[in-house]
Image (tube, rainbow, N blue to C red; front, side, top):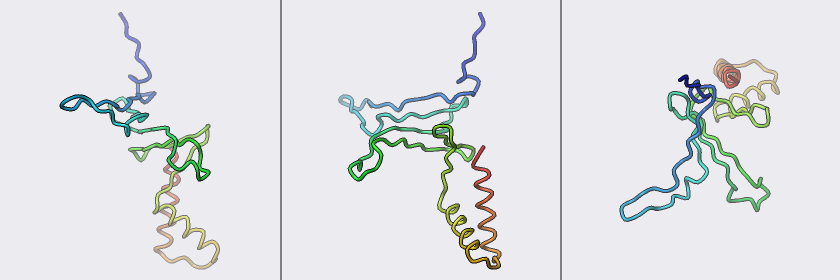
Length: 131
């Protein structure tokens, strides 16, 4: 008998693992409302690559979207795509580098070495963020 490998077995797809919502505790079980809807997506080595959850935000009355998809990533080689378009998530250092680049362009002046290094690191990070 031949066993066909699934995309989970080959590593072509990340395997979903919903978070448990009922934890057995001494004297019974308790429902953990914070775990509803969370799903870990694990690679073929059983390491979590993403954790996702879709929910309705607490502050929908202020005009924010009715639903929110939250994604936590656990590797530098991860990218997020929404409706076929990649989304680039920028950390504070990258944003600072972009702001410095814009300021330098607006000033049209010579660049000091520290500012230039920040800009170079930012450009490298952006280029590397799109695997």
